[in-house]
Length: 242
Image 1 (cartoon, rainbow, N blue to C red):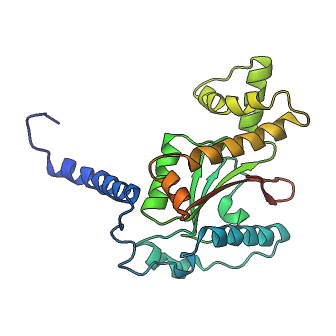
Image 2 (cartoon, helix red, strand yellow; image 1 turned 135 degrees about the horizontal axis):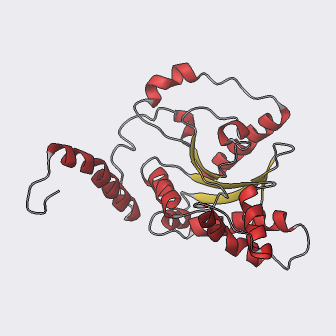
């Protein structure tokens, strides 16, 4: 756009969502009431719960999933209300691994989980911003960092750290993000892959808890809880470790 010309209608329209989000996020950081959060009834009233109840609900769903007793979710009837709004009861930072599907692993339906996925389930500015939106605008009370057994991204990072392995394309960016967790546990006893996976979850939890100015405020106020768990590919069980 020309610096001396007024913005076109299209440019003005595209700028509105960004301005609205920044306004909402700024309001949340200052502890102000967010527009649209209390005036209208949430599409999923059962999702208006606190952090501890959110974790308990996730774990109960995981137990059903593990035992093969999952409930039937009626996606069709929920669609009209969810087309207008959303109020998920938990956020999940999960690995992109095709064998780890949070909505299945916790036996949840559409509109229940606010999920960010990246190979290695680490936090970066984009995932932090996404969870800031989830917390400040959608009212998410709980975030779970979900690692998993035999994670390929962590295993590749171990190979890079120990053997000097290199990888093509943009894969080195994953290795760079996971390298500190691997190096931190190199000399610890036990299985290096397990230790590094757990360390990555713990470090990511701490990063999210300290992310300013929105997530850290929620943690301090008690309106947000951040925890970490590991999904076992063999059993389907999620164990909370942080």
